[in-house]
Length: 352
Image (cartoon, rainbow, N blue to C red; front, side, top):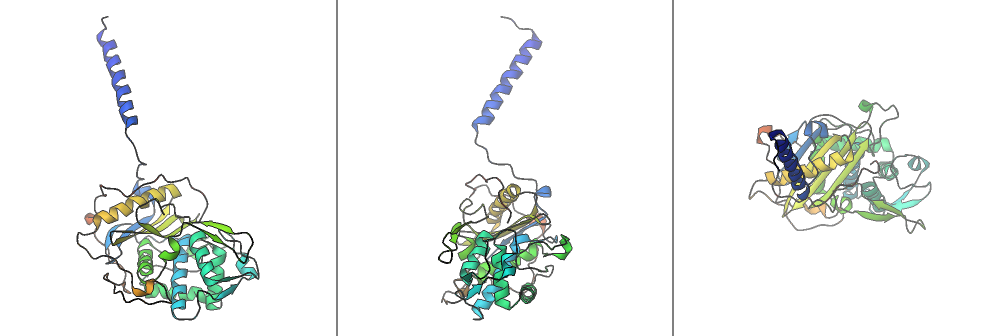
């Protein structure tokens, strides 16, 4: 059979198209990385051992941290426990105000009594606003007094563009962003480094699922960590998600591999899937950028527990009161060729 040239050309083109389509389908694919311009308002990667900036993009944009605020609540509570002003087994009696906070919660009821540590788990796993409010009120005598401690701690850590107004991160009644909690990715990275170095925050943030309630309640609340990267990205063991309409989707993450630890903070993503994909990419980028033979990460002795001691001496550079210095963007590393990614991100579920 003889084809005319136009018919032959069309036939070959169709065959090539079918072949290319088949080849494309045959190769495994992973989700495309979102464009950084729209994937977040700001981001930063730190080497946890040294505090050096490995990558930054709009890291000084001021925005609400949403429930990531609870990381500062944890930091202040850890200090108070270390000082002996409260204990992990201190009983917290729930008030009517605690029970009416709203948002994500463990549905505390007035006159229920829980120890501090149970409420810490509720705050860090479930992102329970009622638990954060009850802890702040109990620890400082009033929520306002506790928020003053949060801002004093922020100044101590060099978080110069940060203002806290709540212990939980919920927006103000006016819904005006300027009247709520505010911070930057760079400031929050300072807080995260302090937490992984000086506290036992990983004990709480690394827990995927835990029951809350018994023996006080007959039926437990099953708490599922809002951080989708836990158990899916190699080495990820914290820290905290956050979401409000004003903040967008936020995530402070840390991961430990072969004795090296990175910290990633992303704020203001348009949805949780975009946030999680971008953070997973930045975790890989951070490990690829760590200098060969650089300092390993070792938490301080106080990080094991505020009530225990250890003789182990840290080899990392301890956090200081000075802000993290920025590395030039031209020095930003290429993405890692190897990958610790081993998951498909689930669809967005509940707010945190």
